[in-house]
Amino acid sequence: MIKVAIIGAGFMGRMHAEVYRNLSKANLIAIADSDLEKAQLLADKHKANAYSSLEELTNQEDIDAVDICLPTFLHKECVIKAARLGKDILCEKPIALTLEDAEEMLQVAKKARVKLMIAQVIRFWQEYVILKKS
Image (cartoon, rainbow, N blue to C red; front, top):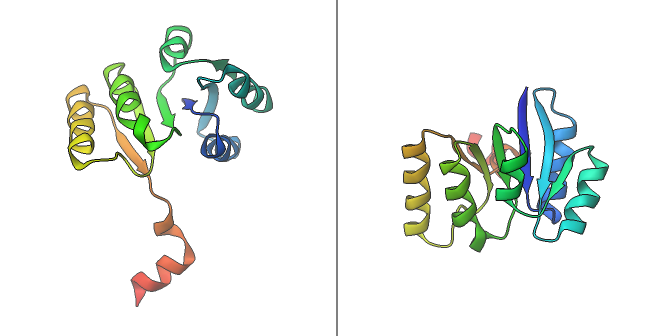
């Protein structure tokens, strides 16, 4: 079972938390948000622990992966921190604001030997599947 923490308790964090509820091979154990009250509300709903930062969370929890559901301008900092902590990463799209930031994020993840995956799900939407077949 993969132990997952969500970083960001906004709209996307809530959507991802709902998905984890239905995955048999993942266990959502923690949620972090700079607004601890928001993190606590989401954590309570999903029987997880709430934290105010990635650093606080990783000091308290043994997690395998981090799911970054933050605004794009915060992706780089969070991805690099998670990679340096040795955590696999799922990051919301877009990966970064600039190509240079994206390349740096990829290099840090590669050097840390962790997976960095982008949550690009529209390729699975029926409309895109049909277009690809055309």
